[in-house]
Amino acid sequence: MNHPIISITTDFGQLNGFVGVMKGVIWGIAPKAHIADITHDIPAQNVRLGAYALWRVVPYFPPGSVHIAVVDPGVGTHRRPIGLSIGDQSFILPDNGLITPILEDGEVSGQPIQIVHLNNPKYWLPEVSHTFHGRDIFAPTGAHLARGVPLRALGDPITDPVRLEFSRPKQTPSGWEAHITIIDVFGNLTTDLPAKAVTDAKQVTFKLRGHTIQGLVTSYGHRENGDLIALIDSENYIEISVVNGNAGNQIGAQIGDTVEVVINE
Image (cartoon, rainbow, N blue to C red; front, side, top):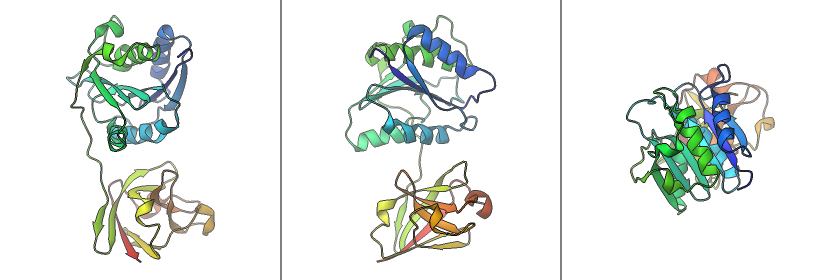
């Protein structure tokens, strides 16, 4: 690719210049690369939220994109750096479960998948620190991959990437037991329940933390300010929200909380 696209997702923030260092390394190897910042505001060491952020954006990138993600509390340990090809997208990241939802989606949809341990130092920086593999391993390896180096040249094949355990909705006699998976910057509560599980129901009720919500609304503006509502989010999952408010703060919700879903057909 003449002008490869490389995305970067980290928990580095913007204060200390770590992301800029990674970009410098990338451009030193792939000077024509277009670099997209996904986010650098993942809470420190929160691999699970990093995994969700990466999962959300990857479907919208063009074929051949390379995604470098560094949320890496295990840096400098025996944690492996890995590279993956899943369908027409490539990934460079630590082997700590950060790739889990994307990998599982790829498996379910039958996409071709290749995984390697990034253990070929030819494609690292000459000196590798114990604390900044984003600069020394992930950035240069991703840049070489974007320039056309085959994934198989970057290291040995593996079949056992680390996977995170993510919650799954459970069907119950009255409907579903769902769980809050993400609380976004607006305080909206994303659940693990796909919208298709309830869209054919004549009536659906959501219960969490002592609150009851009757039915779904189309969007936030269909209720009054301060109302607690349920709707279908942009990824087609059930979301709980407060109109022009913060549901997380208002009801004291936490990631992992149970949402009881009662369906009357």
